[in-house]
Amino acid sequence: MFSQDYPKDYFASPLDIPLDVSGSFGELRSNHFHSGLDLKTQGKEGLPVYASADGFVSRIKISTWGYGKAIYVTHPNGYTTVYAHLQKGNGKIEAYINQQHYKEQEYEIELFLKPSELPVTQGEVIAFSGNSGGSGGPHLHFEFRDTQSENILNPLLFGFDKYVVDKRKPKINGIKVYPINDSIAINDSFDAQNIAISADAEGNYKATKIYTNGAIGFGINTFDNMTNAYNKNGIYKVSTFVNGVPYFSYQFDSFSFNESRHINYFIDYFQYKNMGQRLQKLFIKNKYPLSIVESNPRNGILKTQPLASYNYKIVVEDFSKNATIIEIPVVYKQNTSETPLDTITNRKTIKTSKEYFFKEGNWSIYFPEHLFYEDFKMKMTSKDDILYLHEDEIPVKGYYTISYDVSSLSQNEIDKSFIASVDDNRVYYNTSSIKGQTISTRIKKLGTYKLVMDEEAPRIYAPNFSEEKDLDYKQIISIKITDDLSGIDSYKAYLNEQWILMEYDYKTKRLVHNLSDNIYVKGKNKFKLVVKDKMNNSTTFESNFYKNN
Image (cartoon, rainbow, N blue to C red):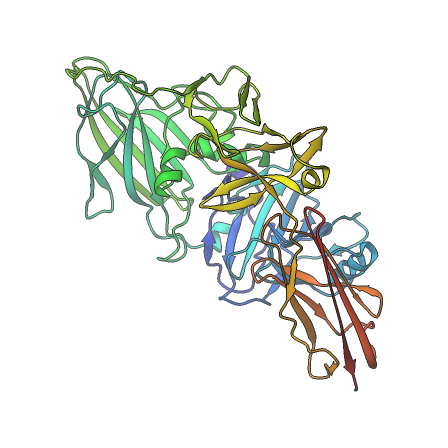
């Protein structure tokens, strides 16, 4: 749909403060495009969050990770708004959430509601802003979805550009040019090249001349300061032109969750993993199902011809139509250098159209067809039962399977083992399954893997209360839990033999229970906490404390 198809005056701001954007729609994140606007909350939690329009609470999800505490409001005009990283709900909504926690006896819950259960009106306080889940600081994540398709939509399409005032032009950090195949030279080199650029007084850019003998593509490192001069936000639209002819474009109006992972091919993944820089590629070497780039018949590849020169222009725009332009002169030049020989040896050629099964020591690896975006030569070795499966610099579309032969292990060792990812000498748990004498896991990236045995129970420590002491001056009890190998899988807390809600923040490793419930009684109170890791190792902590008043 075009932007004019969206209602511009139907939805109101979810906050009653000027909107300051710390994260834009479509912004490039790890393994995904950002799906909404991150709105600053003045560096604090507890700001009122308002229903953006009439509707009903259709979904509530409380999670340790991701969105943390999130409320979804479905509206009668076919859209759903999402409010995430909340501190808590308000009034009837918080009461309902608390009731469901105790009904299911779980902190992590997901609830789907009928229209009659929790109706809301525009401007009603439905929650308070927070820092829950994967939030890196207090803010409100606010997003729009098409209710039927669940496609994510840019909130600025709904008239929110009147709340988000943006008068700054995007900036360009760098330009890179890529040879499309091994026989193409750029400035007498067969490698991709960073191009020198300079800004003019108007905030536009010029680049040094490029000489090449064939097909090339470009990448751009760019950002936008939306509502302030500090946050480097994502770009709304990029268009390219060759001698004035439109060549390639994309803009972030909408995408679906299942295509978000294609960000790893949308960017120069090798550069990101090795240099920490996200360059957006302005060409498509191999087609892939990302809706924002599918409408480019030329694929953005400039096929230079003898005796020809070209003006390659990139226009970077934000939603408020502030535009930055860079022009790059390109000249065809016959290459006189000898095409470099392929000196890579002892690697396996991977064709993306084929499936593969490999055996390496005790390891087995299965790649389904179309797992990778491009063909490549893969390094694969194993040493001391560690599998080195290339490096995490080649993007992967989906899951593949790694298996390990555990026939030499005892049953107890097998039951306590999992396949871990290894990064900077740290191990990370992967969900692993046992079938006969084999442990397997499904993985979505290349890298280093090893079989890890976890017989160590979780740690429970640092309670904010003392044994046999009174807690009359406290409103909460808290305690920390950690597990260094497979990670925390579950915890159950009891007060006077009744299950109690303890909220877990993985960032602080802290469990917190509010004593304002009816379970905390006068006199002696008995507290018990049972924590299990993902390999079923368990730790129990018990204590007594008193309430005198």
